[in-house]
Amino acid sequence: MKTKQHFISIFDEMANEDALKDIRKQAIDTFSQLEFPTRRHEEWKYTNINPIIQKSYTVEENCSVSQETIDGYILGETPGNILVFVNGIFNEELSHIENSEEIIVSNVKGALQKHGEKVTQFVENTTDKEQIFSVLNTALLQDGVFIQVPKNKVVEKPIFVVNVSDSEQQFIHNAKNIIDVGENSQVNIVETYRHGKDSAYFNNITTDVFVAANAHVQHVRLQMESKKAYQITTLNIRQQKDSTYTSVSVDLGGAIVRNNINVDLQDSNIESNLYGLYLGKDEQLIDNHTFIDHAKPHCNSNELYKGILDDKARGVFNGKVLVRQDAQKTNAFQSNQNILLSDNAGVDTKPQLEIFADDVKCSHGATVGELDEGAMFYLRARGIGEKEAHSLLRQAFVGEVLEFVKQDSLREKLEEIVMSHF
Image (cartoon, rainbow, N blue to C red; front, top):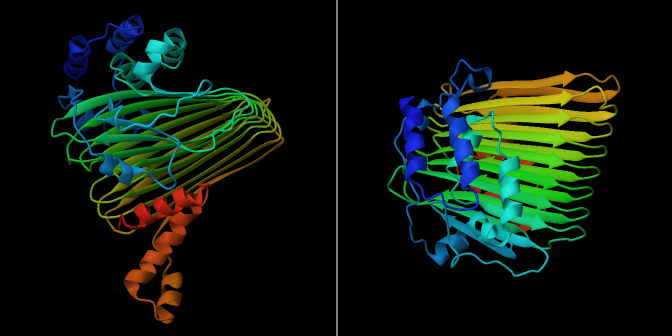
């Protein structure tokens, strides 16, 4: 209770007199009735969150970051829109938003002023009242991204969301990102999380993506938090008929990182792709939990998560695919592959299928091993040094995930960052 009271006291100290005040109050009341998960809960069996929730946090410490620094965080080609948040605070000067009468690209606070009722409904409808980190996110919501693309619109350049944490304080940041893509539209979203000082802050992020009929969304995410930081993200995707959603997620930083991804395939002829890469060193813990719900027929889902773990790092993969009785002609494929570079590194992996339809093609599997000794021998026998051979094998391993990034310049930059991580 003492731990929960700290978060409630943060709520009491925040200025909440805005259009969301009633929703925030309901959320904090719900939060007070819920309990934080422990390792006795099956979904949190391998992740101890006590180091996160037992710290004392502050909120919203403003900080200056140079334009040069932000430019260095832009991956690949120059985007059309850039939204920059420093310690959770929207920085208008460092951001670049192209004015449009059709597309809404804004921070949540700005969108509340111009589209109050619309944003309020989204926030209320996307709060999961049974999940404690979701209601905490709504109660302590500081800002976030609001993107709405109308129907029949192709957004040519990617929209970049740059989050920078740069503080010596133990601060908490709760952001809600809402991405609403209309019928027959197309957009690319690139999120990046970077840090300045190596401090123990906590980012609690929820992102809700609505993909209308025949819309296409590519969502790339790079997480490079401080090695002392904590991040819990919840990503909810709701797709309608004939739509395509592709996520490519790369996790490199953080002391404890938990990613919850929930995909709701609400109609037929939908394609959903989840690709993830996690690289852990020292004593990092990176936990990926995914859930794909096939409710209708003729849908495809592809899921590939790969991890490389060194030192005493640990990885967790828990992926569940549910194929309901009406979801005939479903194709669902799930794979988790891991390489351990140290005897002290470890991974807990649990791919799952629940199938209640009889005309489906589904598979799932997991592997845990070391770098291929046969491949190493082959490379060394051709005059390649041990260090370079290791690098080539790691590059080939991670390349299978990164190849799903469509833009060449973005993919090449991600490959460069990943390969320099070791």
